[in-house]
Image 1 (cartoon, rainbow, N blue to C red):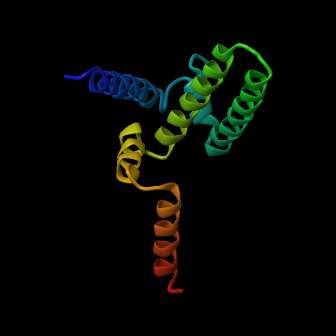
Image 2 (spheres, helix red, strand yellow; image 1 turned 90 degrees about the horizontal axis):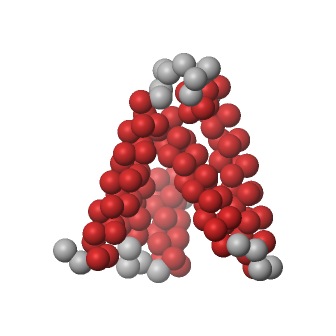
Length: 127
């Protein structure tokens, strides 16, 4: 096994374990679990956190551009990814769904992928 495949397996395992913990918080006590509290508040609360965390990522990246510690950016991205996992779980999805989509897109240029998506959308909408 190459180092890249070991790293990929480790990443997949980490995402899978974290997603399982998040899933286990559904229906939990919102007084004792932050994730249970988000689930309890509903999808607007979950989606609001995504927006907040995405903004913090952008601000941290701008700070890095100006010489700030890169570690802060990594921390903000981790927060965003975590809240994305919460959102996926809320909608009964998981990291494997996202990874499968990324694998499907692998090798396509962004321009090609966007054109394919537009074409599919036109076909579905009867345009």
